[in-house]
Length: 214
Image (cartoon, rainbow, N blue to C red; front, side, top):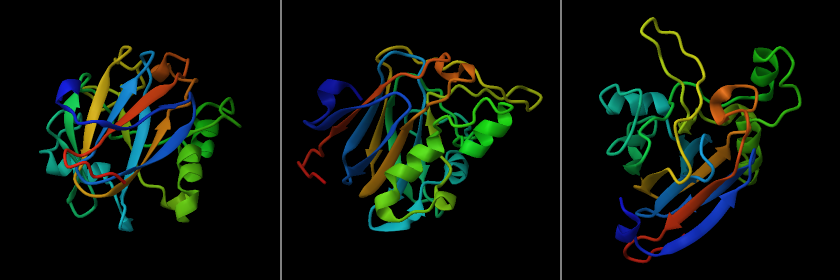
């Protein structure tokens, strides 16, 4: 979706490097996530704003999109019942991860032989963002990882690679119902995902054509 085709801006903000934020989307609003400096990925989770027990499910999203592991323009992000939460309406990269999930403090510490101890993680960012809703750490759902380059080889092996996104690349996600969306600007600096240098990202929320705001 071209910028000139979108309605007026409801919100324009920056997520600092290594940090997260929470957004409320009304049905019909479009969230544009922009990689400001390039080679930066971010984790995204979503909840039904009227029933927080209904969360986005990456595994169900793969199933309803004909088994596509790499979702892109025209694909859906759905909840555990297969009901659509977000539609990808524009995508300049077409390469996102739906398998890796979010790093937790324990995973970061264990996987990197202690070097990750004390470092910020996406899971921590989500816990902090969702605290006002009373969602405990163990109930943070699996994430859709924007721009994350985590290729699956022919033998089934997976390994981290640097994000393919360049400065200005974006993905547009249209809310198909009222949603709570949390985004964590990936803090990972021990793998090549973010080029070993986490950077800020930008989020723009466009109002619905009818002018509905949250």
